Image 1 (tube, rainbow, N blue to C red):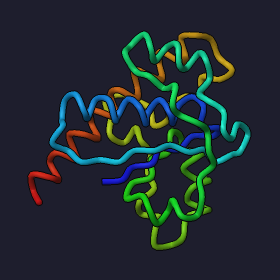
Image 2 (image 1 turned 30 degrees about the vertical axis):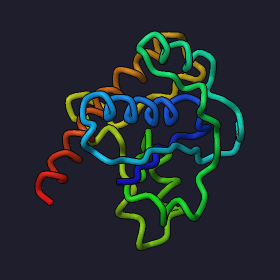
Image 3 (image 1 turned 90 degrees about the horizontal axis):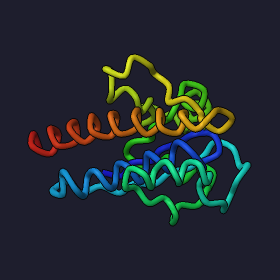
Image 4 (image 1 turned 120 degrees about the horizontal axis):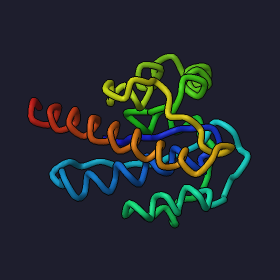
Length: 158
């Protein structure tokens, strides 16, 4: 399964989701074969590492985002990835506008995998305080576990 996480600038939420999913999968469900990447809908930070505040919050929970570099979603991504997961409804709409018709059903909200979160959007922590980065991690960890459970169920059914 090839999964792409997408936010606006690809320096906070989507690289967090990329690394959290990869880490939890390797630790808790190593039988799953997944490929994970992240991208942004805007090219504000191409080539930049994740925001230092994002990295600091992630390190406190055992996630290393230092190898991630921001990039913009490319047309080829709609062919390459089986799931394209938006961090919020604004980016979901941007993705649906860009996606070819045959790929639109692969684009969905990441938090659909964490209905218990009570929200559809992973909030952008960029302009907020330090608690925003912790909230992102809480939501991403919950949705990552929900997604992995779904993938495990699908693998068992296959």
